Image (cartoon, rainbow, N blue to C red; front, side):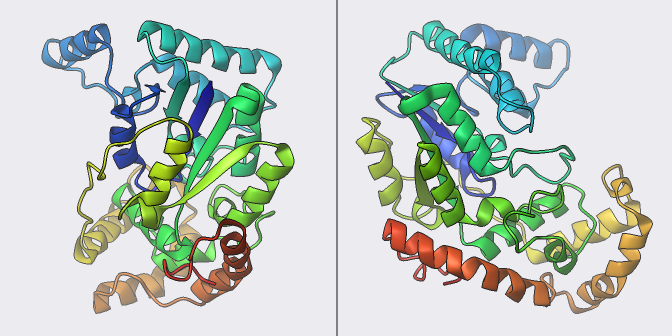
Length: 329
């Protein structure tokens, strides 16, 4: 029996993949975005249509128990105890039983499990290599962790744009200034780069004895050959194509949202020290006057130089042509 756990990363087509996974053949899907049971759907419809209570997007799991126990166990920095391991296994077994699923394979998908959650989750987080080790503790030799990797600067641009759409009030240059180029020190709540040193994560997983498949985002959104080969080796068949692809918002819309976040200072803006806004003010005004969303910043080149040796090592280890996919090499 194989336990496949797709942990993201965020902004790497996770929502689209979850739609694809829900229709996979040869596995029981217990992850985010799966269809609810009939009783769960009835309750959700009753809440929405009768009580006028919308269903939270986060509860869109085929079983809430799996979502809750895995989110409580893996991304946090608390020590993973034997009781937590047993609780995770129990939730999976119950999910299989509820849906009379295929016991040969189980597939769980949730980008929150990457530990690279958005910075508004201002809590200690276990780094991705620790999460992979934790999945190994839960499932042992049956585990296969799937990580969708993405060219780092492209990831950071997409990640920052998501933050802006959800209330982040700082420019791209300021955001990059907070990103660490040291994988060991990149675990502060405002830096997400620790999850982007892919070869380091690969080596740590190898040392922990946990199987990990790194699938390039650039493959996922095009032909998906590598993605399907990874799952086919585990006896799981994925349908062709990639559903649920949403169009990106324009730069103009992001500038409008950045301005709104900056001027209205809603709940999320209040999380930040006013002195930080002064530090970012000149660049912010330049963005408004020029209409150019991504301001020039030396921090981009700093990060590129940090990622180059990692990407070269990753390309050598996997055989991936990362240069063709515009990874810094």
